[in-house]
Length: 257
Image (cartoon, rainbow, N blue to C red; front, side, top):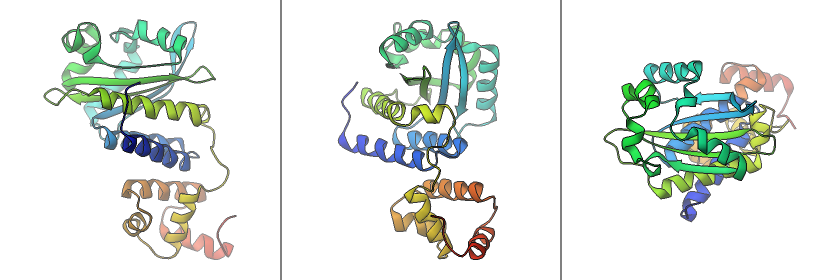
């Protein structure tokens, strides 16, 4: 794995902690993970969690970046429906290698033939040429359950290729994700039956009348992180607004334990 700056390792650890806070809502943590990776490294992300059956990859989770447009989503869905991942350059050799070693990360610019071979592949021509994808970097880690967690980032043609340091940051983050909470995340199981500390603090601040912007400033969080916590609170308590949330706790007479 590439050496990465301490600040990048700290940012990855913080992002994973935020995902854990949202673990009771798979959609919320997956969206937050994608947004966080894009903020740390740049590009458009995809998250896949899969396992092998008779040697064939079966997708348990396949999620595309929230930044993607309708055309990207259509191509992504078509690729999965066609089984297009089988045509992906290097996949046939890299997936077995990942299962033998437990992890593998790569940039397409480093593979045999480099970006030219990638751009001339049938897979690229069918699914990525219309999106003008320039480079891609991927991190793949296998967990004890046999599930493979695969995170990809793509950049458009004309943008700079991914650096070795960016590849290392993605590999570090995915390894951390896989080794700590990956099993529960891939099985879509709750990470905690209770509110996490940050989600609870967000709830307390909301009930005190703070806006999401004020909460972000108060706790030193990204506004997108706070918004994810608020979504989790609404989902958990079955409400659709702050007013409904406040009314619920007025009736209950206090915060949950």
